[in-house]
Length: 281
Image (cartoon, rainbow, N blue to C red; front, side):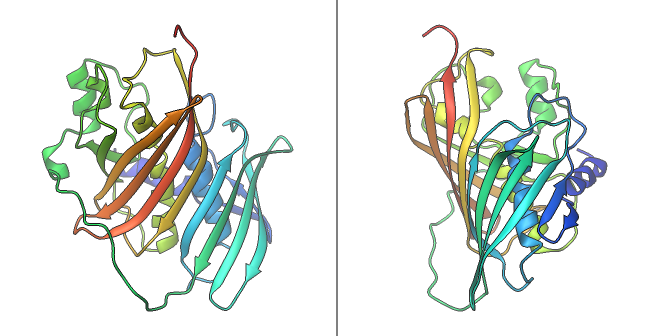
């Protein structure tokens, strides 16, 4: 993807303030039936962060996707200032379209302070430079990429989804970064990771089952939670290590760990989503 597409994604997360606690989101010019969930989550986090002092980075968020978003109209984000404490700040954000809530999020922000430190080690995997790009993946599969270049450069360490023919182990790993250099500012980089974290995680819940043919499956994010453990840049390579511990009742659960190239664990992610069969059993 060229820099222009990265700029478009940055614009997507550049919310316009209407009132003190209300923000209007921008939708990208894409041919989609519904708004991508990661977009709403990323924009909601931007809106929350706009009401918090810069010395308090977000450390966790918990969100629910309530209704499909309409890409033809803007999304309004209402921010409720739940708490402003000495160390922690809490915000609740409701995304609204057509007078109804389509998404809500609680986010907590924490001043930087010293404390105990430990983390999981990073898995040993091949580097992103040794893996095929999106364009190369689609060409190898003999498919047309109808969405075109993505704002996020993703390189699959495990089996390429375009090449999967049957059940796989319940784990997948993906290198990701934005396609192009970004401005400084931790809020932007955190919101872009929030955006990207929704792109592949639910897919991992299908790994043990093999993906059904196109048109036989309905998938949608239901809830999404993230915990952030330290600074990072979204325009540098991050390893997204994903695992699915369970699927049942038309829902799949997936977890993810995000590492920097030098092995620091900077985020944990948990998501449950709808994976409903709509074709023959």
